[in-house]
Each structure stands twice: as structure tokens, then as C-alpha cells.
Amino acid sequence: MRIMIMGASGAGATTLGDCFVKNNDCFLHLDSDEYFWEKTDPPFQEAKNYEERNSLFESDFYSQENVVVTGSIFRWKTDYKNLFDLVVLLYIPQEIRLQRLAEREISRYGNKILFDEKLNAKYKAFLAWAAEYDLEENTTSRSFKQQKQWMEEIKCATLFLEGDLTVKERLTVLQTYIR
Image (cartoon, rainbow, N blue to C red; front, side, top):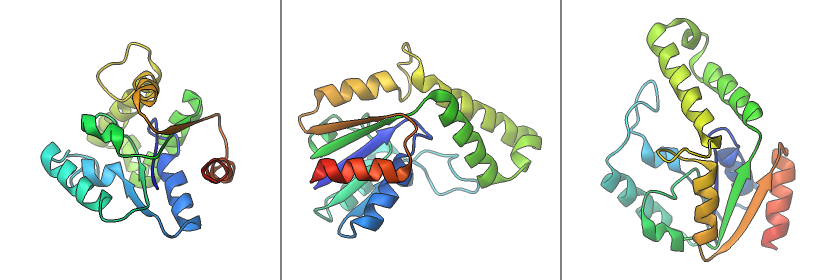
């Protein structure tokens, strides 16, 4: 079975994917950030070339029958619409998601992110980008509207999980749905 779990940054797709794989050890977990970004210090500074990214992703994706992909690859390639047996879209209110992202970034970079001018500018730009997900008119980056539309176009099963559910609650719904 091939599953994709997506949503806005901070919605919990990677966390749910990790939890699902820990409870279903026959699955391989692939997170889109591992393919999208070059390894840098600090992380998430330089995007990979799209051909390299897609080649690496496809090689890993096809290496195993049971795969969970987390993150947003829906705009990487048009034929990715046909890769999955199930696509899960997570949605939580923006204020909760942005608070999670702020806490995650401070945890990742420390308080330096608040006082270092260059890091703070990137931090603020990232939060502003993440807030755009909910805007109806957002067409340049990942958005709720685009992900929802993509789910309507694909030919596999879909599951929409809305609200600030715990990881355990989401896992229960996902595993029940799969059964």
C-alpha cells in the first residue's frame, strides 16, 4: 500500500507518518523535506535541483511495496497523481499551526533565532509563508485550496482529517480507515 499524508507546514504530516510506520513496521517512511532540500547547516536553506530530487524520491519510492510519503509532493510531477492508494489531508486551524511552527523553529535553532538579525528575518519570512497556506488567493506556494483540489482530481481513496486531533486520534482514524 502506498499512502501520502499532506497538509500545511506544521499540520503534523511527518509526525503522523513516523507514528504510523512505528506501528506498521512493514512500511518505509519518505519525507518530502529529505528530497526537496540540500543538507545544509542550518537546514532548509537550499533546494535541490528538481531532476535530482525526483530521481532520488522515485528510486526510494519504488524500492518497497509499502510506503508512506509525508509532506507535499503534489506539485512535483503530474504523474505523481497515480502513485498512491490513499491520500490523507490534515487540516488544523492556522493559529494552532503557526504556534507549533514558532515553537519548533525556536527548538531547532534556539533563542538565537530571535536575536540574530539574519536568522530572525528568515524565521519571520518562514512564518509569513506558512500563514499563506490558508489564503484563498494563494497560487504561488502550497495551499489548502490547491491540495484540496488535487485530492478531487486523483483516482485513489482520500481521507480528510480536520481539527486539532492528537497523533493517537489521527493514527486510530487512519488505521481504521485502512482496515
